[in-house]
Amino acid sequence: MTILGGLLPKTNFARSSFTWQVDYRQDLYRNFAASIAYINEGHVPGHHRDGTAWEAWGRLPFSQDRLSISLGLGAYYFYDTQPLPGGDTANIHGTAPIYSFSATGYLSDRWFYRLMLNRISPAHEIQVNTMTVGAGFWFGQDQKPTPGKLGDAPNEQAYVTGNELTVFGGQSVVNTFLSPRARACAGEYRRGVFPHVDWTASAIYEGDPEIIRRSGVATQLWAVNTFFNDRITIGGGLGPYIYLDHKHPASVGQKNPAAIAPLASLTFSVRLSEHWIMRMVFDRVTSSYNRDADIFLLGLGYRWPR
Image 1 (cartoon, one colour):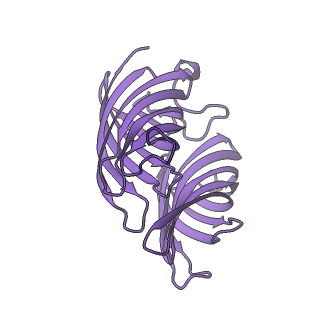
Image 2: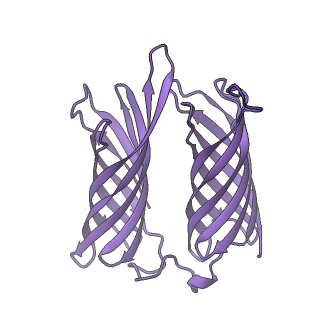
């Protein structure tokens, strides 16, 4: 996992902007990897854009595996917050190709530094280059990737998440140019269904940031991985979020304001003891009425065997 920060050059903008990303890369074989990354493109005039990139990588190690260069190609699903006349905001969603280059140097068997260059090229929106540098940590059990092995559980087939019940508190941020915030809370039941696949059912309250007052239930499937004998887990989830927004009343002919939206999430958990865990979750709500939101949650959970 790598955390990087840097610049989005001027290109066709009046000024440059900051950019940052969090990248999880899974080395599947010596010369091949796959990754998922969250990229924040900063604030350029008329655009606050971020998104999730899914890429496949070709990797060339050298200097006794202390250095490597990689080329990546994939899809970038973006969320672009743009101003509208009258002071309102539009949330524009879309998919774009992303092309990447990275150079990595290992400081030890665990720690490394990385330079990353991205080219994001939507057909009908702004096209940008990002340049970032950062530090990363190798979570795997072995010093180098083991072909066909996704985590560090002694028996891959034995790793299936047990039952977990977690209560969260945190903050929601509505994706407008004013970014109104509110306190949020949630509850989650999690259970493994296959090795490296979890299912969750959640209740979410996004608080009252004035322009929305949204709450509902969600169900998701997650791709998960475990490290350090199941002490740390990382995962990404996707599923439907059924909600009520009391600031967005029902349309003519509807009986209630209930609606459904995609919910994409990332999670990181640490096992505190045999039964207790601490879990962080980042949720992105993708609305159809220009009220996308980010929900940042931290919770304490209890786990028990299947």
